Length: 304
Ligand SMILES: [Zn+2]
Image (cartoon, protein in one colour):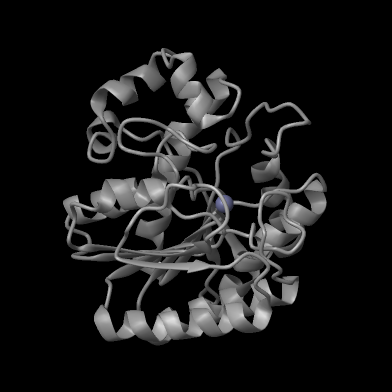
């Protein structure tokens, strides 16, 4: 019997967590923390889907084959690992293949159901031939390119509202005229070598809710005038939060609620499917971090 109720597809794998020392900025348990938080609060509204590992033939659309093989064979040298800035482990290798495919699976679910959310993803600093800033493979570039290669869509908008610029995404996608990258980020934080994507909005540190939300509203209008994408990949990074360990914006929790609501409302009203990834978020308080990352899921459930 159909009740007309549609659960939200969320994509998650129990091997997303990575072993990271407690002193490290990256919270290695944040994926299972978020997943358990979602199960506790929204279990009846969720349809959990598990990804498989990304295949070589699809990965090489976004990454250099030599680099992929180095990851696969545990052969990354110290120079590569210094750029990634995470302790190397079998789990990190395994989860890198899983989460990359996880974002593609999220996008495919969004094409079916208008919206789907990844309990991970947003590894936007990974470049074509090397990983960078906690990112091994670039799930956003991988997804956009493979959606087009598989002829599921003609064009893709990658909307990246993480506090850090998605430099790797821009680099990998720059040769694809049908992938539109829009990044809104801090001018005064990592990565300091900013790239030129389709649309880049660099904001000053310490920006607060009013100005931030106004800029997003204007940006959405500007995007609308230029392109009607077949799908949006939305990086809902919560490192814009005022007390984030690695961010420098002054955005309140209410501001993040309003931001995510505005983005979903805009694209769903235009009948454009949207796939979300969690992006960055850094805090020693793992419960608060899970709650912050859950905002986009809460909003998505309300729109279904
Ligand atoms: Zn970030």
